[in-house]
Length: 114
Length: 111
Image 1 (cartoon, rainbow over the protein chains, first blue to last red):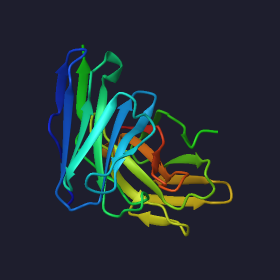
Image 2 (cartoon, rainbow over the protein chains, first blue to last red):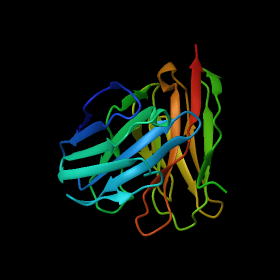
Image 3 (cartoon, each protein chain N blue to C red):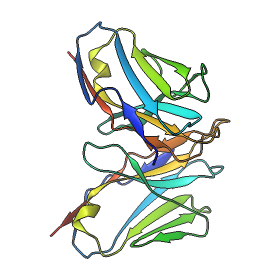
Image 4 (tube, chains in turn orange, red):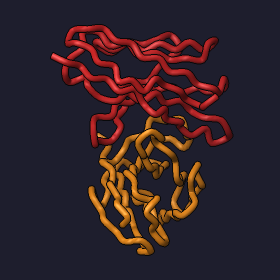
């Protein structure tokens, strides 16, 4: 079974703090994704990566950056957290390079920014 | 027109009922279609892929209508454990063709 893990289930940070969310997958998947999910807005793609050290902007990259130094690990960084970044953050991975493959999700990190 | 549209529900049905969800998509070039299931406060999980010829997995049947650009999910003999939000997923436009997730249809199965 594919396993995608995220570093924290719940996180509370203060406005202006730098926040790191980490994601690890154990199935040697090429692609990794970061989404946020908000009530009424559904899942929105923040960033994705097709390979080590490669990153691509998704639909809502503003205020975020990412890092992929190793194939199994994809980090999401909030350089200066703001209250409008309070959300559920979901990491996903997929096997094939083409973006149409099934995605497997981690359990999510519920981030609250005060 | 939004890329993937679903009726948010909720659909409240009794156990044993048959319930159907529809989803429309805007990109006629889309090639990959899925239904995901998301339980409350959990991550989305793949329920089934949707193939052109339609496919069935136990009590679940998925259909694709390319001409009208809609996908359906039929659940027969509903169980309490089917209560969840069902996300329609389609690959989007552009060279990367990343998956686009609908906002989901909430199903509540009552005893």
